[in-house]
Image (tube, rainbow, N blue to C red; front, side, top):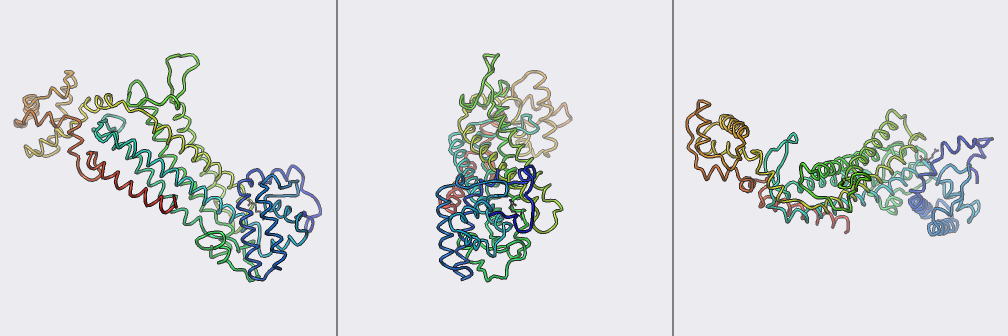
Length: 472
Ligand code: ARG
């Protein structure tokens, strides 16, 4: 059956047909389209809008098509999209009565429904992927609660933390990425079916029934909005960009950390490459590629927003061009999520090097200033000045933090016009010890092993709740 034979006298040119076709990416919504037709036809039957026997024949044909799969569809250029191809298939089996399937339905509400049906599944997959990644991170972190490493600001040594604390920072970020999807899901899982072309129908359809049959949480309450809104797509793709931002930061870190200069991690061979000319090389190619693929997702978001911008109500064929960008963004983000997960969880932390970096370069200096505040009641700014000078002079003399004595501190204090502080040598050394430094940061959110354990417990609870909510 040709859609064009009524109103139009001539076929579209091949060029125009190919150019405007959505068939390349309609393959993804094939199952959803059958589901949508199935629910709609069942509803038409239940409402007595179409004859029960005809409805049963249509449903049978849809079942058969579901079994045979997408390749059972026939395409020529008169077939604009998957919706027409499905209808043609049913027509071949049922005859002209198949046309009743399209009563009170338009491809406009149908495609919006199909996309939402598939998208909610894809969101679920990503949600599960994120939860599994967080689970893996906790597992890796739990053995590193006392493994001290350096934390950076401005990519300069800042203060000691632990490997566990750093890893759990990524877990927190992933948790928010997850929550964004969970929230978006609520707006995705709504039923546009029944909006028809844009103004519903005069047939007494039952939108609650199709909503229930399709497992939606509710239906869209305005038919014009139902067929034309795609903000749920833009929102999902933004969520993907946020996730990819988290992932790209992990990749960037692995690239840096695996350098000779940092020496913090050794990447697994399985996620490394070598050079065709330099035999000594071990390159973090997977992290680099993942880091760059995140840009694709950002690009898809901009493309989608740009298509949507200033579109007049209601359905415009422009909307069709959004869909492939959605699926591509999801594919890229999902694959990146998986590979970054596997890559991060197979690195080896070089804990000795981590400790060495944490103790070097006066990264513990804040604590030296803190004990001056505590023990000598100095204002923090004064202590900051004295310690800054200590670091300056010690660095110039090549003096290690472990060599700083009470006398050294006092000489600097006097030089700057302050009184002697007469700090205990032990106290100074403890303040400058990276592990001590970490342990006394025992406040919520802090890197002390106790606080990191608490954060892990909370995160585990979150995982349990969410796995249960998703029925895993
Ligand atoms: N392929 C179209 C899309 O993805 C289906 C809807 C076509 N509707 C229309 N009025 N031409 O949006």
